[in-house]
Length: 355
Image (tube, rainbow, N blue to C red; front, side, top):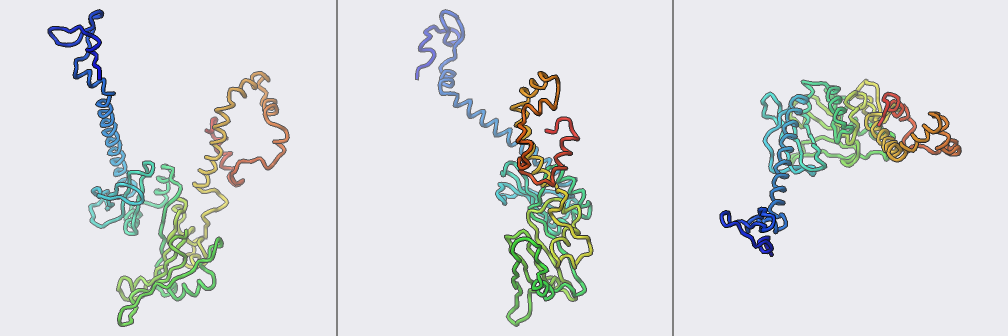
């Protein structure tokens, strides 16, 4: 490849650098010329290295803030990073209590999935978390972070009187007590186990399926723990539920089905009440925001010109730009349920510029 010195024959005798004979300007020597003529490959490697260093620094800062948040909000301490991830995340670390305990309370996953974080807290971990905070406080944190849905939450009620046994659950299933009123009725499976002497080792019945949104497990907890006495547990696994469940755990539990309603006296609540929950509110606002943002971007100046031309007459402007037949057509609406109109109205009326 030609070098700059091939085109500039002048040379400074002392510095041995190529010099333009006319302008007497300095020109890079052979080594510098080779670096420039190589197509900035050396500079590109340096830039990529700096970008990698920056990304690592940002990742470390995020991880440090995550540790502080887990400790302050949940009372959990993050352990050393593991050499594997999970749930499509590259990295993970175990969670322990921040008081120095060694019992595993869950895991934190990060790295991937659009730079999100996945927190998994076990039953023992939840007992520790709610020993120092209230579900309502956790809800406030999640709402502040714009988290609307819990990937999974397990709710359980213990029976020490022998009322809600496995046999009673099978009987209630026959009467439709596990049916929530939507979709197909859940089936049930016998998960009991016996040893070689025909002695019962596990007494459990499951209702629904692992893939369904609601999955029940009714089992003999005393037999599982190998303790004497009566101890039955009714446990339900819920997937993809709104964070509103944290505001009234007992109410949402009893609202699942008739079987749950007979266990707890709390007033039943449904996951999709008339009042929109946080997830529904977000969907409604996002749908409207997209349309209003487009309208402001494309038509704001033109509408303002018309407004000034017509003497600041709002009614005249509205009549000029919206066809009368469109106003009369009640079918022209945003693709959101009517029950969210109050949410949308609040978004508009509480701020001068809603979006």
